[in-house]
Length: 328
Image (cartoon, rainbow, N blue to C red; front, side):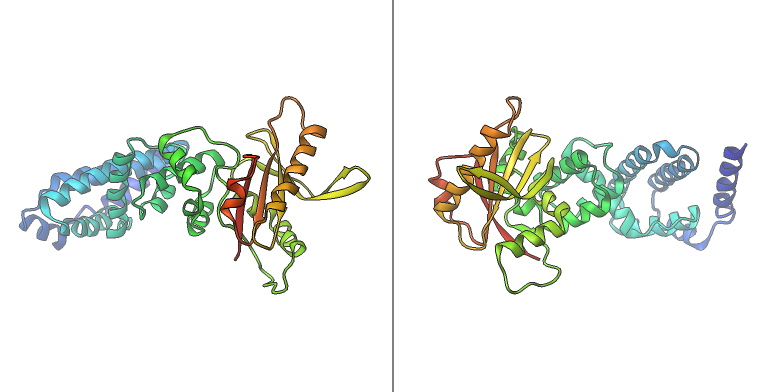
C-alpha cells in the first residue's frame, strides 16, 4: 500500500508539470527539433526515479544502466541537431520532471557512455559517482588502475578523490604501469609509490630519522596506503639480537595478500650501499627466525631522502627496493 502511494505521489508530481504546454515546448517544436530522443531520455530518467523509490537494493545498477542509455541518446541527438540541443533538453527535463538536470549533468552522462564504450565493460562494484570522478581523465590505463583499486579496496568516492588528488597513479613505477597495461601478475612492492608522501602536520624543520618515524606512526593508515594493498603494521623499533647486541628494525610490516614480512628502514640522506647491506641482514634474520615455511621471503623497503639508482642496480638482492619520501 505504501509503495503504491509513493508511486502515485511521484506520478502526480510529474503530471502536474505536464498539464500545460509551456512556451518553451512550443519553441522547440517550431524549430523542428525531433522529440523522439527527448521522449526516450525522459522515459529512461523517469523510470529510474520510480525504481529509486521502490527498489532501493538496485539503485546502483539502475543508475549505471540509465545513465549509459541516456548518454548514448544525448550523443546521437547532439550529432543530429547540434550541441545546443543539450541545453534545450536540460531546460525541458527540469520543467517536465521537476528534477534539476543541468547541462553539466547531461554532459557527464554522455561522457560516461563514451568512457564505457572505450573500456568495453562496466563494473557494478563502482557507483555512477565513482565514474564521474574519473571522467576528466583521458588515460585509459590510469582509469583502469583506479577502477582496479576501487574494487580491491572498496574505496568510497571521498577516498577516490583523495587518491586522485595525490597523483597516486603518476607516482607508480613505469614497470608497474606496464604490468597494468599487459595485465601481468604483480608482486608485493609493485604498487609502492615514489615518492612516498608523508604528512608533516606540525611542520617539523629540525629533522632526523626519529622524527620521520614519528610522522609515519602518527598517520600509519595513510602510510600503509602509500605502500599498496594488504599491508599491516606489526611494530616500530622491532628488536632482533645479532650475536651479543640488539639491533632495531625501524618498521616491521606484514602483507596479508602476498603472505610475507616487510622490513622498512628510514634514511634522511641519499641512499648508500651500506643501507642495502643493513636491511639485507635484517631481512635474512626475519626469514631464518620468524618466517614460517608457508610464507614467502621477506622484502625490504628503504625510504630515503634521495634515491641512488646505481646502488639498487648493483645490489645482489632483488627483494630490496628504494623509495624517496616527500613531506606534505
